[in-house]
Image: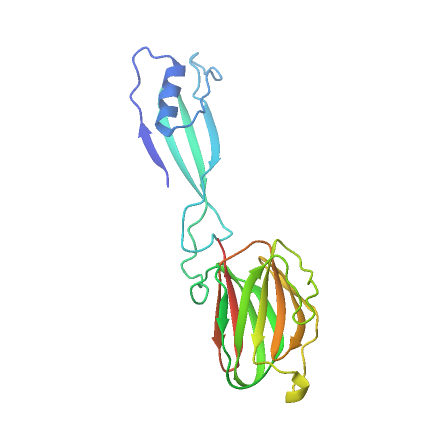
Length: 243
C-alpha cells in the first residue's frame, strides 16, 4: 500500500533541510542533492531509495516462504522525492497445524496398559511449519508406555555403552511394553539409524531389553516436546515445537 504525504515547501530552506525533514519523519537517512538541469535551468528532482528489512513480528505460526513489500513515499514537490521501501516478513499461516499436546522440556513417563504384547515396527520423521514430528509405529496388543528425557550423554540400556548421535542434544526414548518381536510373531525393526528432518538429525534404534525398546534421537537444539498415544493403528507421536 502506498501513502503519499505532501510536505509544505519551506520558505528559503535549502535542499539539505528539506531532505532532513523527510528523513526525520521516517527515522531513516537517505537524501540526495542536485540533479540533471532541465530546459529551464532548474534542477530536476532526484529519487533515492533505501531498502531495510524489518524484524520478524511475533506470530502464532512460522513464517511462510513468501515476503511482502510496503512502500511509503514522502514528497516535496519542488525539491525532490525520498522513497523508503520496507520488506516485511509475511504473517504466519493461519492454517498451520499446531503440535499435539502442550510441549515442554520436562521428562515424560507413562505406564503401559493391557497384555504388553507390542513391537515397534517403524519410525517416521517429518518437518512441519510449526513443529517436527516423530512417529513410532507399533503392532500387537495393549497400549505402550514410555520413559523419555533429554541427555547429552545417552547410554545403551543394560550395557551402559555410550550411544553416538549427531547434534547438540539427544532425547533418549524407551517405549515400554515391547517384548522381543519374534516372541509375538512380528517382523522386527532393524537396529539402524533413521534419517531425520527439520531439527531432528536422526533416530538410532539401540536395543530391546526387558520389554523396553530404546531409541536415541539427535537434535540440533533442545526444543519443547510433547508425547501422544494415537490408536487405530497404534502410534507413539513426539512433536518438537519450533521456537
